[in-house]
Length: 170
Image 1 (cartoon, rainbow, N blue to C red):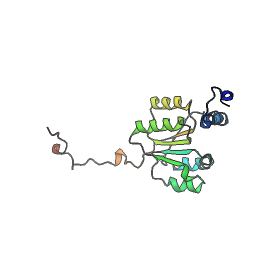
Image 2: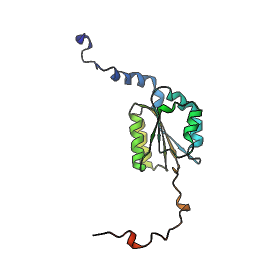
Image 3: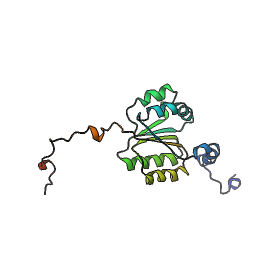
Image 4: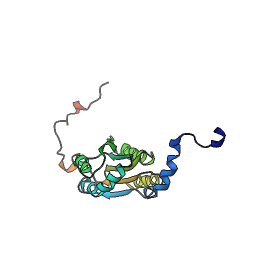
């Protein structure tokens, strides 16, 4: 029996990628970037039926930095399998884009949705290069504030203007 297999990979998990790649040519499209005024609520509503279908594949629906917009209820009402939703909370924009890249090329995700501020040309180009080897649908929702107060609403605080709070200790 070993002579019949020759140099072929012996682990069945290694054979799945060729089947997935042949069946999922639609996933090799550029990453969709959508500006949002509703923190992604309207866009998620539009995508919810497609996400419900993708969640039935047994692969992850990855949500990176979703704001508190009631996305759990919205997805559950659309029929998305909530046991296939993976939440990622990144600490900054660099980590957010890194997490998106890894989720797109891992082969374990069927969709990756990222909430972020506006992408610059460099980051946008970086994601388009990643899209060439992506195995999942990628969506970037730009302009989402992630529940952070805007700079317009921040009043300058006089409470922490004393240098003693920020001086170094030697």
